[in-house]
Image (tube, one colour):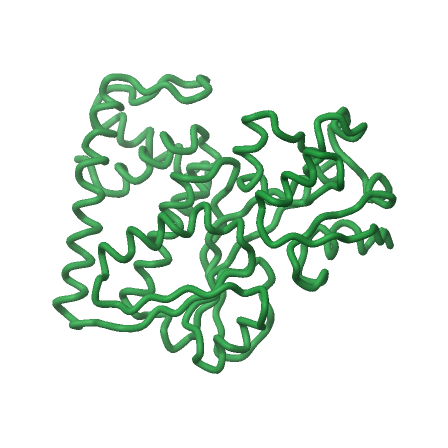
Length: 306
């Protein structure tokens, strides 16, 4: 009567608090997800959550199924992982690079979980600031690159992890802090603090400032905390992912503005070589990264898999 897909759907609904985002998480349309839940409620002859509540409020029956999901889904995942090992006896190497330090917020918990599950896989991590990681991936020097700037390179496949909004961080005393959103012209006379990478790899330039022909003064910093110190002291403004800013916003350390009236959203990808896309440990790393990200980060959205 109750199937795994039902448990996954209910868990996604609880974690996102929204039918729309839950549907994205389990790769269904909102209509298909609603139909699936209605079908399950008819089978069980009871409601699972109270409609039109935000965040979603689950009934006693819904809470019981969520408890079941929390017990069963990790067991299924572990069993699938063990069977993959038994079937393939798979060991391997996972040398990876990231293109921004803010990724450490969710990547380190992912790596910790992966090491526990795949102790036989050799794992190493390098920063992507001082070299070009995607060509190194194509050459076989790396096995995975975390990037928001996919490039068309033969033999490389991009796996979407999640979507995020880019926000402009400003000091609490800055005049822009009182605006709901900013236009490119608002940043023209500001000092824009960025990671030390080419500007054509930064969405705030390619998708917001460059189309408007706005070229602010640039200052670089390698660590997010250094950026926030500069912003808080009024020495510049900074474009960062919403999840990277969340802890500083919660502590009222800085303020944030939306880029444009509609906002600017980007997608974070894991770039892998096509010859490794079916390796069980690689698939498990990607699944672990997505699962950990949605448990760890605020304000992200699911995005369709390739």
